Each structure stands twice: as C-alpha cells, then as structure tokens.
Length: 428
Figure (spheres, rainbow, N blue to C red):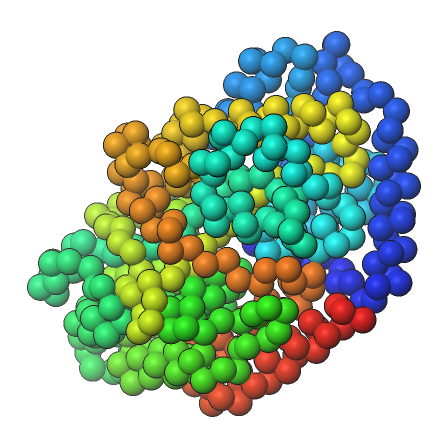
C-alpha cells in the first residue's frame, strides 16, 4: 500500500498546489455530466482480488437501488493509483471518489485534493455512531473527517495446524516468549546444514504490509515511529523490540532474515513455514494453497496487545461538484449500512466497519468473525504525516537492517534522524 506521491516541500509550494487544484475543482462547478439521465461518478480503488469483486458487486447493488446515479468503478494497483491521481485531478480527468490507505491519504488532503466529509457524519449520525472508532479516527486530519471507512483490518497470526500437531503443539502462542519457543519447535533442519527445510515463522522485515506489522510490534512494547509530530523511532523500547526479534531470527533460525511481504507469503503458502503475520487476504491464500490453517491474535508483547492495522477509507475529490458529493454521500451510507457490512465482510474477508455486527452475524465466514475480535487493539501509525512515502521507506530500512543483523541502536538512530528531518521540512 505504499504511496509514491511527490512530498510537499514548503508551505509556499503547498499553497500553490492547492490553488491549482481549487481552480481545477472550480472548473467542475458546472452541472454534473449525466449519462442516460443518470449522474455518473467515477470511483478508483486498488482491490483486485475477491475483495474487489465483492466491492464492485455492492457498487452494482447501489446503482440498481438508485436509478438516478451510476458509480463506475475502476480497479488498479495502489501504486498506479498513486502515480496517476494528482495529474488526473489537475487535468479534471480523475475520479470523483477514491479509496486510499489512510496513512498515505494525508498527502492528498494537505494538497487540497480531497474535501472534508464532516457532513456525512452529521447527516448519518445514527449509523456513524456504530463505525469502528479507530477506523474513523484514522482518516481524520487536523480535527476534520476527510474519509469514510472502507476496509479496516488488524493483522493476525495465521498458523499451519498440521505442522502444529506434528510438533506436539495444540494451541497458538499467546506471548512473545511462547511465540519464539513455538517457532523453535516448528523449525526443522533435517540434514543439520544450518538451513532449515521448515521454518517456524515467515517473518517479513520490509515491504508495505511489513510496515503495518512492525508498527504494531513496536506498540506492543510501548514504542512507535511518530508521536505528536515527532520521531520516536530511536527510543529504548524500540531498540529492545528489534533486538529481541533480531536475536530470535539469528540465533534460533526461526525465520529467514530479510524477507519482504511477498517472499514471506510464498514461504507460508509453500508449506515451508508454520506461522505468518499478515492481513485478511492471507486466509484466501491459505485456502488456495490447501493449508489446514488457524487464525489467532498476534501474541501479546511485554506491554500491550496492540496490533498493526490495515486502514483504507473512501474519499471524495475536488473534482466532485455538489451533486456528485451528495451522490457519493448516499453511496458511503449505503456501503456502511449494517446489512451491507455483513455481506461485505462475509464475501471479502475484511471485518465489518461497524461495532454492532456480532460474530454470529458473520458465521458464514468464521475467519472474518475471528479477525473482527482484534479490531479493538488496532494501531494505525504515521498519523498526519504528509511525506508518507519517505517516512515509511526510512522505517522499512530500519526494520530490514535490524532483522538481518546490523546494530539495532545505530540503524534506528539513522532512520530516526531522517524521519525527523522530513517532519521538520513539512512544517517549514
């Protein structure tokens, strides 16, 4: 989910971009274009698997229920959307609605590319009161609501039940120490050459999903990346966390070092690793691989049960005029209605955006019922960061270098300095 939008370099530059975008939006002030008597809105999103099919199915349901509106979805990868979004909006050729990871959406909000949606929360107060609080908070910037929840899911521990049984393990671990001990028992080096044929854990140390995982892991020990607009990466608890996992990987060989998200996923799917931490899409991948898998909360850290969370919201762009904004609001309310959220969760594997959906109502998909129980421990880091690409890259470098064996204190100090420099630059 990593973004590649150009970072903002100064307040003057920020104002210039905002002016350009506002002029572009003014050009949209004429009555909305209609097709066959319908108000047409374009929606961009980055879901290209089963979740994307379910999303577009619900969009079709909305269109049929609202014959005066037609929402036209366009799916592409998140990177492609990031590269195309600002140029398309500046040329008045972009989407009216776009789904974006909340961490990277700040870039577009600060460039005035997205408009506030406070009105949605006023007009639909009864429903909005049941939205998952952390999902709402994740898309707030400077005290205003810019996004409406779309997909919000904590990372979970996926484990191979067959491998657990063979190792004499009957339940998933509940603490870090239990986790490492279980991974040691599940690691098998049959020929004694130092390269296990089976690893206890596929631990990713870099990649877009890895950043979410590790922000949660740091929080489990009372640490983090950014707090109140200041870098905190070099703090002693972060050093303690990464040293702990560096030792577990290097000394006990419970996981290959330096894997990205894709490599870790492939290792687990190939039945060469017994455990992995990832988002809800891992359930579908496990089924495709023929794995008898279980899902459990990530084992609790020394100080908290916090869990990194994948947070995506829907945003309205400056390209949408008043009629389109009203239509978008109707769609947001439709999608986040209770019955649609049950259907979305069962079909997509993402937990509901609402707190009033019970596990029993999700019984058609036991996986998502399990995942939804961990939402209360959600952590969404990088809040309010404009240069998400730069900051996340620096964090990614720190976790990768640490797990592959470089001195943790030095690595964290280097990334801390780079992150703080970027935060200082944003305030200039």
